[in-house]
View 1 (spheres, helix red, strand yellow):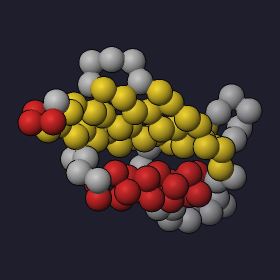
View 2: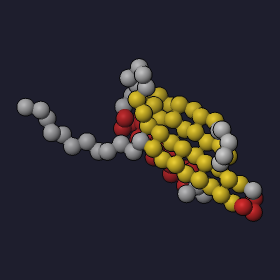
View 3: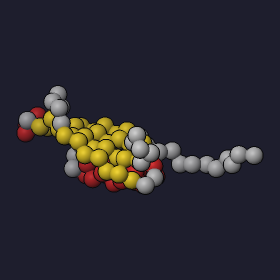
Length: 84
């Protein structure tokens, strides 16, 4: 019989924006968790000005939980900096 373990859901995508018209600021920040072609888990960060092509970085992780934890840490940091 198969195990019926409860697994915490993994947040796989977060999109944040920071807009301040007085400072001509319109930025976005996207965080994603996904499995690579080689079976590794990666947390991908994308950021830039809204409406333009931004930059991205990948962070390799050993498990989806580790990737989700890293995503949450980056999300918390961005929210502290004014992203919503």
